[in-house]
Length: 348
Ligand code: F6P
Image (cartoon, rainbow, N blue to C red):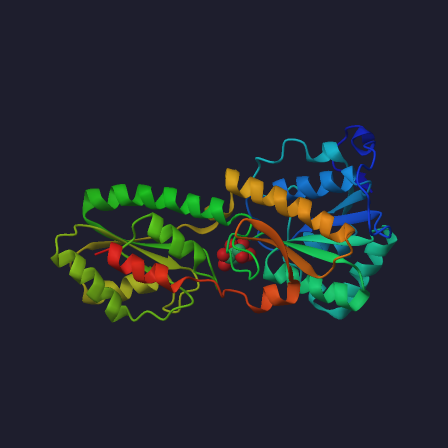
């Protein structure tokens, strides 16, 4: 097993300073999986340091579930996670692993985990990550705690997922810049943001960026209604407009919608911007760093307390636990309809 850096093992010389309820847990494996999200590193740091503080060894599993299959394990100590709280991406790397979707793949992964002496896992990711964690834990009886790390903010049981705040702020910055050029040229822009199944980023960034309309995967929007809204603006002296489209919206993406609008609506010169993966990168906001630290700390505490197959989340600013199954099954439930109604009023 490699050490994640070449520094001394001094980081592991901390004496356990807390009482541990679950004496069976001597070594925790931590991994990030699925789409990366700003704040994942701050979360890994919290998991590593809380474990070591509690007298538990930590193994980093690189490339998520793929790393379990490939035995891509690294020893981590308190100094392995120095100066990462401000970094975007994930030092543990991430992947979407096809082999892990089969029972044979999971059995092989579990054997490798056991051979490495890992007694419990902390999984940082979104619904796909949690689905794998739930299966592995159920089939092989290994304790697992999930931490919601995804820019999509689409998990039930937490008001926010790690990375969502940073991604939304990145989008707002882009919208503000697009607004400058849209206003200068009297143009209509269609801006596509991430969110295959979740409209959270689109809705919140759209409101914060003063968008004229927001199209979401969770809602059907008729193109004629969109055109009527844009026409209303144009005839009441709006000289430019911005429409935010979530990637998974049912009308087929920003280019398709722009083409359909262009066919019927002649007021503006129309342009399209797809923001893409820049929304996933960047230094996490202070909100995401604090959230990631709280949830990483709470995940280790939950394992020590004997919990398993739970997701740690935050609700009304309190850390709480939800069954992983429930968190996955109620996916996307939290889109606030009242915000859409408000947006319609504020964008006249
Ligand atoms: O789940 C996070 C997310 O960024 C989604 O918003 C997006 O649909 C998807 O990941 C893109 O995944 P990939 O990077 O694998 O193309």
